[in-house]
Image (cartoon, rainbow, N blue to C red):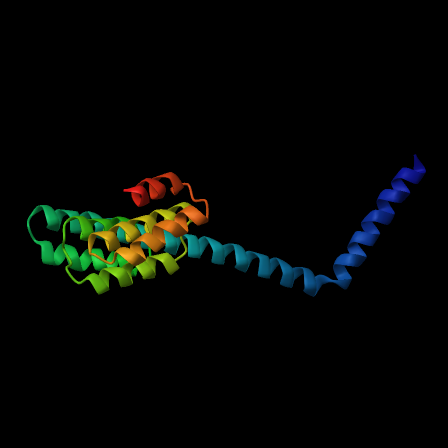
Length: 169
């Protein structure tokens, strides 16, 4: 029983000595940890705010498009594409192509390239490559379009069967 209280006393003394010897290091570590946590929270907040702003722009562009103000819609969709948002950029490019808001084929290809280089998941990149291949086939650059579809087949993508069906036609 006396040994147990001596062990507790020794442990408290060791802990107290450790704290006194490393007081500055402990305080610095706690401040650094607090700063890192606050930075992460701030960055997450800014990212959420940016995503909300892009979502609002996407909705606004849709409103412009439905009210036959295609020029303003096109500008907003292009701004969304340039933001490289993982979700809305691809949608914006799809609408530009589908609604024929932009006739400059080179610019559309540059948008595809920009989005391919952005930080997308493998599935989204494969889908983007498929869409680019279909777009190229549509605008008569058949060789590059077929090459993109073949690349999907070669890398055993989830879209492999679709690419094979398109190549067999």
